[in-house]
Length: 224
Length: 224
DNA sequence: CTATTTTCTTAATCTACATTAAGTACCTTT
DNA sequence: AAAGGTACTTAATGTAGATTAAGAAAATAG
Image 1 (spheres, rainbow over the protein chains, first blue to last red):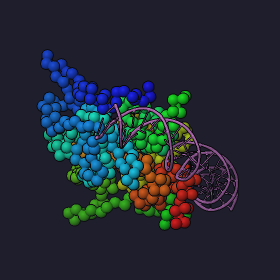
Image 2 (image 1 turned 30 degrees about the vertical axis):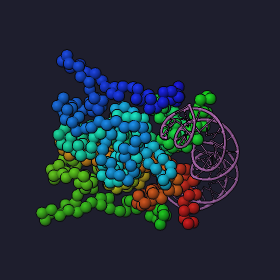
Image 3 (image 1 turned 120 degrees about the vertical axis):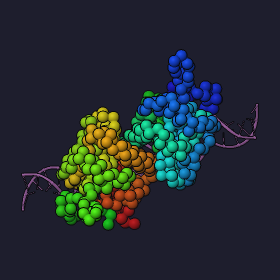
Image 4 (image 1 turned 90 degrees about the vertical axis):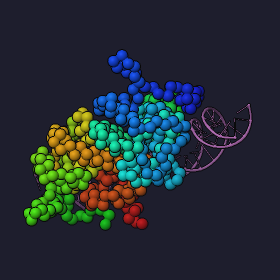
């Protein structure tokens, strides 16, 4: 179906579910659960068990309720966020009125204010929890320390940045060349999970249309 | 003045001018001209004279006439381009009709198809010379070799990518929240040089409006 | 469970920008 | 110098999506 149904509500779903859907590894007869974030790192670099330990020791896990704001516009962003469960968004506010969603992040995604994180100047972005979330926090400070201790991590974050750049370039071109309807269809194909979890208002904002127009567009698509 | 004037024409200007506006360094009493690209690298990393030599030996300088297409959509991008002089653009073509400019590059800027360059798959972008240009070519192959020989270069290209990502995020948000007029004014402030060099049609395409609307908008701004 | 807020829908009206078309100036090629 | 192409302008008309408003449904708070 196209959208999330009435029951269970966003928070209910999340609280009911398992908080940590980790992968299970069997090593030398021992059973170990591999934290999602290590799983994520291993997509691009290979870490020894010691390095994994070190990495984890520099991070912190926290739980947040929906609506919590992790970063306010005007603040300096000092943390990268990795999502274990739940959903986050980054957005800015125009003329103190209109919100525009820059990105969503759900399980397995990183989020932060790249501008502020890199420049250590106050940014324009808010980062907010949309659905109760378990988040891994990596401070800028610890990230720098880890770069020293595990140089491979430079490579990991370089690749992450490269992929993000490519995705943003594509989205830019899409916004220049596609209609709202085409952008929505592309969004659905790329993020089938998000459509179940995020309110229409948020998706409309991500696509760059008003909630009213989005509603009209959606019902038009359903009639087809 | 707002736009390039009639004389000299784009090509005349370029052919007349000095091809290589290098910085001049005085080292131990000797006078050396520092290639622009080394100057560019030194903005983020420090290279020894030997490393500089090595880097330059892996690059190639070529001259291209306006309108030359350096990369066609559908091809795999195997080269990064650094602009010594002249102007380049990257763009895609929608439904075989409408062009959309992703980026411009003039003196001191890098350009390429990041998606294709990183994935080594066929890309959607064209890269074209807009004004007769002197370009430094760095092949993907040589770039990888240089990463091995001068690991600092990883850092350089990481920073380049990070800055590009931040710029693209900002442009995305601008496209979501600003009017064409506001985007144009911002473009003028950020790229005063480009306005002199690039045709209105290209700027309109970059901003995401038709040349007709751009013309109307411009004359409205001039009347103010 | 009720009250209040937030989200979603529908519909009328409005506007920024697109499309089409035609004319003029300019640039490039020969 | 002539000719053909490309860029720019202006104007009429069209449309995707915004704005405003108001009611219904759903979520959240008390």
